[in-house]
Image (cartoon, rainbow over all chains, first blue to last red; front, side):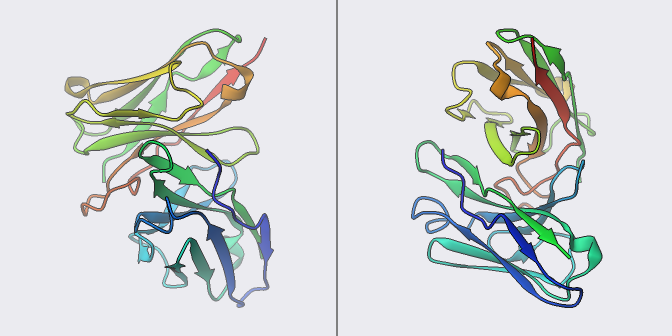
Length: 111
Length: 122
């Protein structure tokens, strides 16, 4: 099924804030609270940042925050640091067809 | 937090089969479910399948339905992904993912294994 829509790339300078959007439909983001965000560095497994729309996973910096409005979820990284340079994926539970999960297309963040 | 490790990846010809394993660091699975998620080289993440641990629920993405079969052996704390009729498009790193955090929040919030690479090539 079609991936959630994310911008291909976002860039920012150290210390700045950036926001990554993730657009889905009324069958996924618009309907469920099960929206997550993952960070992936090259050659590594994805790492959970945010779950259930806006809950930070254990050990995740307060610089990462997230929200949802309608069919769109957003991840904000404040106080951008060099270590934040990575790929970011949103993910939502969906019932477009069977109960399953759909990922975003991914956003490359450049610092 | 339970750790998961995948194994069984390798090179296989189109039309061939491969069986992946996902093993937990505990003697039995303590979670309610395990997902497989894959990532083709240079591409994004794709959900593949979900298995309910201790239950019969199995869900498959349309792209693998009828070709992939997930099974579990709780006594061996291992989950298996049998992949048949493999195509070039199945080439990817395959990750197994715990459905739940130790805090109880679920829906693919748990630990990701390091992944195992499956390459389908003639």
